[in-house]
Amino acid sequence: MEFLRRRSKPRKLREAFLERYAGRHLILHRGLDPFWVEELLKEPGGMGHFRIDLRQEPGKRPTPVEWIAHEQIAPLGLPLPLLVTVDGEGRLTLRHLTRQGEAIHPSELAWLRDELETRFHARLHPSAEGGFTTERGIPVEDNVIETEYGFTLG
Image 1 (cartoon, helix red, strand yellow):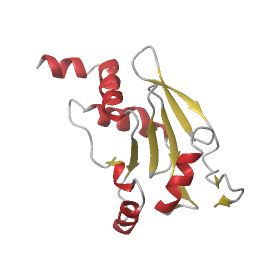
Image 2 (cartoon, helix red, strand yellow):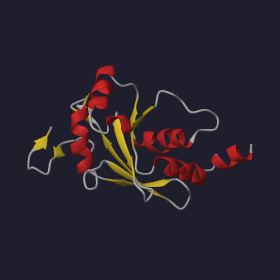
Image 3 (cartoon, one colour):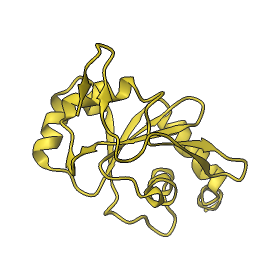
Image 4 (cartoon, helix red, strand yellow):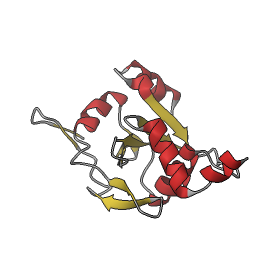
C-alpha cells in the first residue's frame, strides 16, 4: 500500500515513467486504423513503439504512463496520433503524425524522428514541482518533414 501512495505524487510518477521509458517512443492516439498499425509493424523498429490509447481512462491511481499521457500530454491539445520520444535527460519531445487531417504513412516516421531535435511541436522538460514545463516548437499546422537529402514530405 505504501508503494501506491508514493507513486501518486507527481515526482514519483515522473521518475517511474522516465525509468521505464527513457530512450523509447510512444504513440498516443484515440484509436488507430488497423491497416495503419499493420504498416507500422512492417517498418524497421515499428514494433518498438508503445501505443497508448487515450480513450482508456486511468484508474483512481494512475500508472506512470497513464499520468503522463492524460495529465501532462493530452491537455496540450495536439492532434492525434502523436509521437512522443523520451530521452535520457527526462525530456519528452512531441510531434503529431497527421497531415491534412489524416495520419501520415508509418514509413515517414524514420524521417520524422531524424528531425525531432529541431522540429517538434512541443517539448516537455522536468520541472522542480514534479511535472513538466512546456517548450513550444513549430506551429501545429506545420508538419512537413524536411529530409537530409534536400526534399520534403508533405
